[in-house]
Image (cartoon, rainbow, N blue to C red; front, side, top):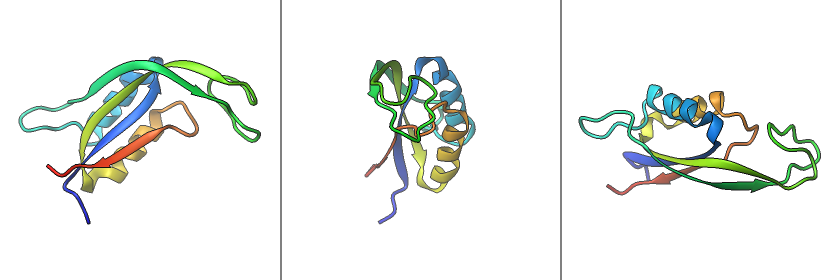
Length: 106
C-alpha cells in the first residue's frame, strides 16, 4: 500500500543539523499547506560503537562513542522520498546515518 505522505526522522550531530534541515527543505520535504521548511527537533545523546571495517566520522573502531545529536522530524510526499533520502545522505557526516521513514495515514 502506498501512502501520500511519510514522516522522516533523522538523527544528526548538532554541528550538521542546519545542513540537514536545509537539504530536507530544498529536496521537497517539510511542506505543510501554506508553509515550507517545517520540521521539529529535539536534542539528545546518540551512542554507537564502530565495528571493524567502519570509517567513523566521530569516534574510533571498537570504542563506544556518545555524541550530542538532534532528532529532526519532517513530512515528505511519498513520491519525493528517494530524492529527499539522497539529499540527507549527501550532507550527513555519518557513513551510516540513522533515518526512519514512517507512513502517515493522514
